Image 1 (cartoon, rainbow, N blue to C red):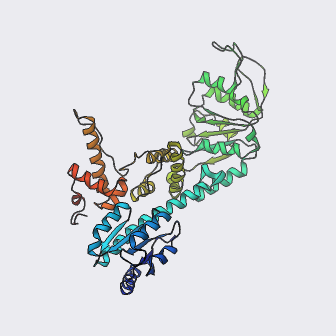
Image 2 (image 1 turned 135 degrees about the horizontal axis):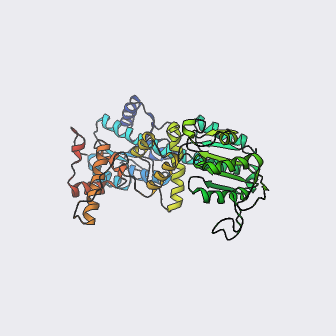
Length: 451
């Protein structure tokens, strides 16, 4: 979308023409109107641009135009042009949500700069809405949303093999979504009517793992007071998901190999064998084809599982999918906590695109939850929150808040509007806190006058 669109409104024909030419030379796509009513008719929800309007005009004035625009889209930036006597009115309008105002006569460069900032902010809003719409419309592919070639290949492969009975070996780093993939293989197959049974092979000691997998008869070992159906038998007709299979003890591997070859299980404490209709999806954090990573994992078990091998890419290898995934998790967090997410900001966008995401999709999901809870201020830097010895709780809170404000000012080179957006607080609150904590904004923007 082209977010360099500008709707320009002024009843002064000569001034309208002059400003329009200036903005066109600066690279903006300008549509000019002498009446606010005509401009209003050109605005639809998700309009990819901004509005620049004079305040004093016959009929609908600039303030009234802003109110009407806000009813259509409260995140569409409006910049007001004012005469000297209208400055108090413009300041009051900014408290109501007007993006900025410029006082006549104004330096064209200052107007262009303000419009560029507003256009950048609008671009974030429009892109955020587009991504949210894509996340909502992803349908069955929702857990694996992404537009990168790697994710398109992954979805295609899963749909190709889902309704077959082949065993599958998934490889991927922690947090990449291996269990999600296993669940989709189950849901997209005729086995969806059966049970999806998951077991983490690294979470249980060997004695317990054997019982969990194969089941046992009453009296099979001390404490086995009654018969128990194992996970393998319980998954018959459905799907058995074995996570962290590289952690499976060697003895259990031998028994598991027998199950995969014969498709039958022998519970502990009996010589009886029971046939199982089994499909196994195994997952590993290491490359089991590499002997140095495989270690004591049996080579024959690896080859038995490796009928179809799928590698799930880490998030850092598909960074263009991060914004789309983030918006999916953001909406899920809004529903979970019953509160709205903060508006998009340049700082948040930069963090999403520049962070390496070592925890992959799981880390991104947790980050989205922190965003909704308001716990991500200053994401681009570490803030020292160590309490001062002997300080009271209010003093510690003040110290932390002041550090967050200083960090945001530093990250945004002292730009007031960008800093306010990053902190998510009103302009008046921002200036009140600067005064309270004795913070000099100009110190973060050498050579610039205070805004």
